[in-house]
Length: 155
Image 1 (tube, rainbow, N blue to C red):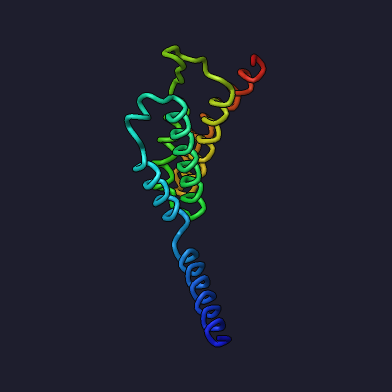
Image 2: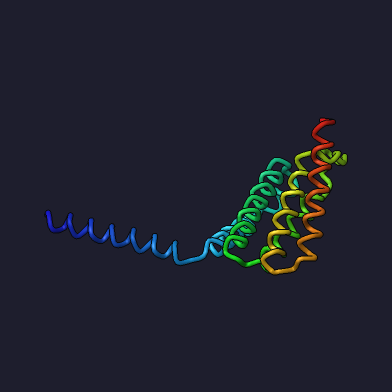
């Protein structure tokens, strides 16, 4: 009986160690991308079209996954992938928001988010040694940061 318990413990320890070794061998961006694909494939189109809270929750979670993926690409020194994703995030941050069919005014959080994305874009361009792109992205980041500050004062 003791040998059986000992064998079970050894197999469990080897299995857990193998799992963690596998997790460390796969780049974080690849794991995040798999999670992103799995989550985006889980979209219920009928519910998305009718349930506003589901739509907001789904979009927010998808954006959080995209944010994490962009950071992972930057940390792994993959600027080409990061640039494409960050441009998508910038477009979504600049997209107008609607509530009950009425367009909502831009708020400081949206402008601040756009500024953060442009800062990430400038970092990605810096990794690519694209100094013109980096300069333009920094200029946009400063512009949106100033806009966020003005909107924050009005709010």
